[in-house]
Length: 459
Image (cartoon, rainbow, N blue to C red):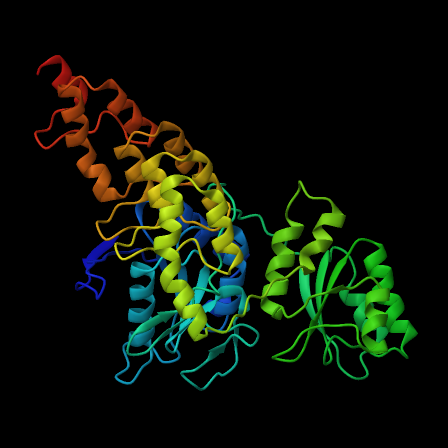
């Protein structure tokens, strides 16, 4: 691994980057589901050591990898950004340099808890993107969802669109993927024999790319019969449109016949996302077939930012922090119903979760975590909600934050030894206990090389 420092950013942060290089390097066209699992496990292994991750990836299958990782990385609380280039970075005229620097800056400065793809000054949701041009620097697009961020003179984050977790579960990577899935594209004159051959065992899931808004010929009973036989035998078939933009619906008779044949509407999912999601869901052994068929569920959050919303976003942080300080969940609920984000920080970068952790309001902390608050947010002093809960010794809050995945950074762990020695010297058992609850090894050495127990025994 190689470490390097980046210059101080506009947010007055100096970011430390570590480079992990695979050997041998892979052409993205040669990648398989095993490679997705390897990437996911490397992220999981290093998850608590870094605030974000950037993956350099070939463009040919980058949309597939981004989609797969978005499902495999469960309860994600940090940014994972894939990027690459159309022209190799060592060429004099290339797009790799700007793409790499943009991805590094966003991953290092912003808590965007999603798998994303950064290309040509835009940050996209990973499972919403597709490659649209083989000969342009503007190679990727997110047809049905606006970019999460744009990097021009300033980096502008569309926070209304950024996905927020609503669970206290801890981050984990599911590497089990079902490889018995495939893509089948309808075309005029396709034979029933072709469809039958494609749907034969061991096929378990298929993304069927149909015409327009999810249509197929309704005058082909032989074709529809093959689809019905497959769905009746347990094969999950997702109906996705061949069009770049738009969604699958059943407005026409030619679309309704597919639903009657047991196909599941894929909404506006890209084929890459639908295939990755099928592979992920079908690999779950603890989920029955009916639950797996809900793979077609999708969401789309697209809000236009108006002047009124800008005022709302400016006023929300101090109001939400004030409500968190006095433990007023009803006030927080009212702000949320107005469309306000409870994740935004005030002028000091302190979020409502920081304040609730300081005050020890366990129910408020639970409420915020279930409505998108992130345990990885840092205020202007670099403190997280976990730091605040430890400082003010709120044991139950510390336990809940740890359960959700909160942890100290590498720098904080390196400095923890000195704090432990100070607590031991003063006989502060409660203080030592709270640090232990926060995941700190009590055998950490202080600045003079001594551990807390050594200081206590030999003051």
